[in-house]
Length: 275
Image 1: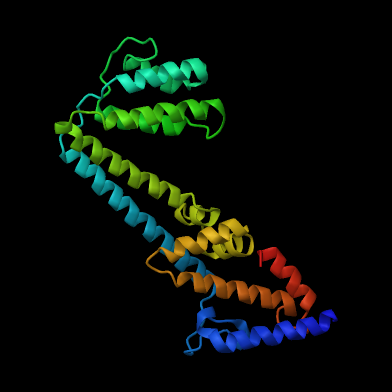
Image 2: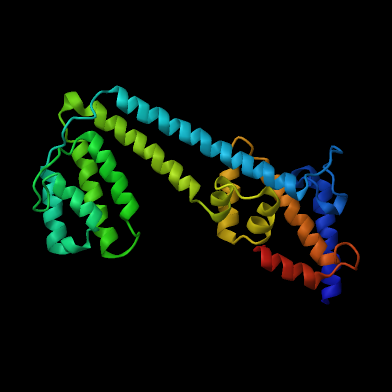
């Protein structure tokens, strides 16, 4: 079968798909760049702005939920309750034996010594509130790989377990803090789901968003973008981005509508965008 015939077959298949589910493709260029109800399809700028707005609104909602949980923690009045030392001290002993204390970043090690661990002289109590500060310090100094990351992971787990070892009467503060931290971690993970999501939250220009993150995005990042938009208050924003992809594919396969349909150009373009 020749590429010319393949191109005709693909072209007819794409036209048929546009006819049957055109509204799902939001302005497929194969049926005129308008939705099936006659409304004008989104431009590249509009599609980018809508996706960015949806992702930012989703992130803001998560931020408000995190703030509310931290406020609930502060309302418990348990911020100054001290954590039991045993699990943390035992863990630091194992880290020293199995990984090496030298693999704990100096900023974290110095803080632990202030609490009286790792051979330090106690100058402050490791309270529930201080445990939250220590957790952030650990996160900010964690390289994400190697022995330092392994050592910090063990210390962090020990601190989290110590939070739940406070006396029952005072456990409400620990549980509230852990709930707030879990929500904050979920928000952070959502922000880092993919390059497109990160750029949207970091204030990328709407006119560059589609080029960078749809035409130039990896398969992984496109999948993350689609999933993130599906969880947002504007899940149909993905349809606008997909419409832009179809327009781009069509333009590449027809020299911007000026030339005959090329199956070879279509195939090349689909491979570039990750099919």
